[in-house]
Image (cartoon, rainbow, N blue to C red; front, top):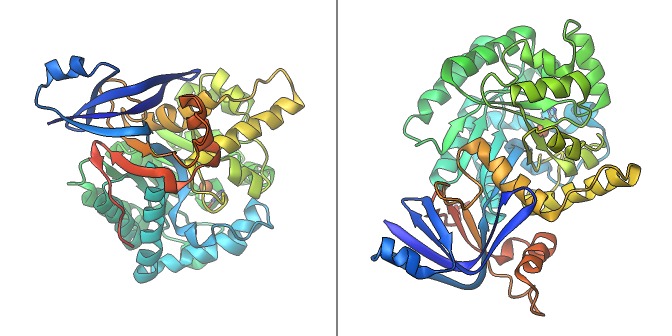
Length: 425
Ligand code: GUN
Ligand code: FE
């Protein structure tokens, strides 16, 4: 079945350039983009029976992708900003995550979390859950029920954490195998992702078991890397044979053997950067988290120039804002702080930030994040009439929406061609 949507269409095929179709049409067949055009007759001759849905003066853009977020930290969003990473984890984060042994609590919180991702237009997410298999399974089902894409990680951890958040290697493997069985029938929109929390939380045996699971079941991997200087020093102590933090993952098959996302990479350079390039490891840039936990500023321009793939992450609750639109703004602002320190480092442009959030991040989920033929139709319809009070150009309308807008202007959301209605809480 083919549907043709009419709206002002904006997307980024390339990092440095917006495609803009004023009063454009996009044809979508079985959830997949057939093409875009300003000429309806081109599509009408190809598929004469296609229904045309007119979004009038609205903007139509690819949906947002969140490459790094912690669902069980949702209650802590917007609080506990007074510590750096390691004491922040011990004092605020671990006590909250322990509550997810309680399935009722998990359901209450996870429903809100998924609803709010929906509200803000994030149709695909890479999510950390907790060690608890039952509540992680529940979270997978909530995404599935909503029709939203997610890679969901049961968090592996067995050292330097409270007893309630420790699990044996055997329990971790057993739990993952249960979730992998659960995935069958989920049509690939929701999948498990192997998730060692970070090196300080996982013994070598745990890291090895994670690497073996990823290889055995062809599952992607996510973790944290080089976020904070105390963390990096601790990893050097815990894994003295590793030549850098990234190497401590690499030696256990957790650094690009299967598709891999590393969050933060604030202090990644030299050998670690070279290793990431060689292994094709993807960076999840989480600018608000880097501010709040006082970690530093990730050198995104350098990563892009070196050819690393980068996406944006909200990192709730290190980050306080779940909106990927706002992550674009923060990413640009961080890059301007780098520029202030060194004028030879050009700051990010709007099209680059948009591309990071859509096509670049989306590629982790398949052909997602653009409106080129063959892409899955993940899209948002934005009615910005309340922000467009003085005949702005289409690009300025998009820019104003990114800087000033919120969920109130998002009037339709699509994931893989399906319109996604508000998940009930
Ligand atoms: N490193 C290990 N765990 C975490 C976490 O929950 N949040 C952040 N920001 N960094 C981490
Ligand atoms: Fe994180």
